[in-house]
Image 1 (tube, helix red, strand yellow):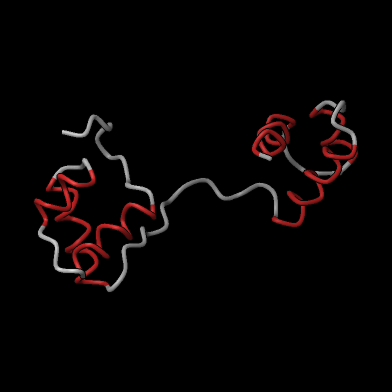
Image 2 (spheres, helix red, strand yellow; image 1 turned 45 degrees about the vertical axis):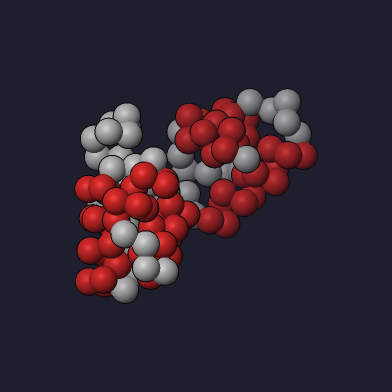
Length: 110
């Protein structure tokens, strides 16, 4: 079909396009061919849109965040000021209660 691993969730923009095309009167087969995705995927997101009025995904269970948004922001600002500092030093200086691995992952994202 589209080569994605089973369980892959379409990005929000793609889901929105599917519902917009459907609302504009396009058929599911036409949408699937135009977007290069399976009819099953189009059908699933159209059904969800019709049932719930949106194409948002539900929150998934998982481990709770270790740091708050404020701590993340402080960490990113500090890393930007002194990019040569290691994750161990940044974690210690910002007094975060997390592993340096978490600090490293957050700073690499930004």
